Image (cartoon, rainbow, N blue to C red; front, side):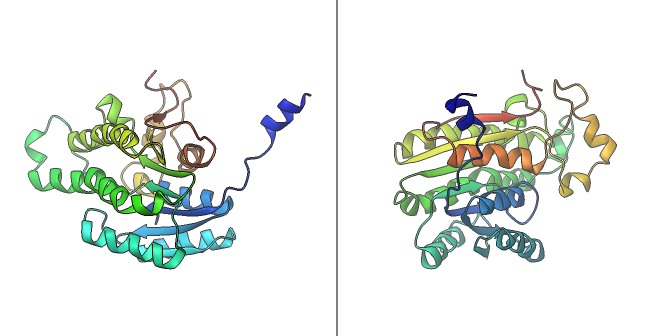
Length: 260
């Protein structure tokens, strides 16, 4: 085997630094927190109203040898977001990466237009679109001090297909993809901004809505016929953060080939 082949097969290097992950109490956010901790990142575990789950994530981060800071904050509240980032600066004095994983939705069949109220629209857009913007904007001064700053937005394949839990959810993720591209231009070259777009993900939250059989059925016709796990998404998020330096403005789809 050539030296180049050996290098390609070697494990990824320990990266290190500080990462802020919103919505890190469960699911994809928790998966990302553990992944970053295993590669030497201290982790800011953001949550909103899920203290026990956030503490569990923090314990997993610490068991991986990293420092964890739990911060409760509704990402749709700009003032509280700025307070959260100020606390990160006080505690760590730096921020190298941001993962905007916090999200919400409502399960409403697309044909039932009248059920998708203005209140539901506003909450979904507040969390899924304004939230990532508020957190990114507040984090920019700290991120600019890092030589390898990165933002990754957790979007959805629903942004591409228009199929998902509700029309408002699909629209929020479509807008998030567009905002990712806009921010990539606005913050270059110091800060890279990308998004990941998973298909259905098997998480505790999803299993609270659908049975295991129903979840697996979602991917039955995909080229790779299985739904994503939190680890699948964490793989892509960590790659975009720490294992590439020339990738920005991209929306990486993780859906088993469903959208090809």
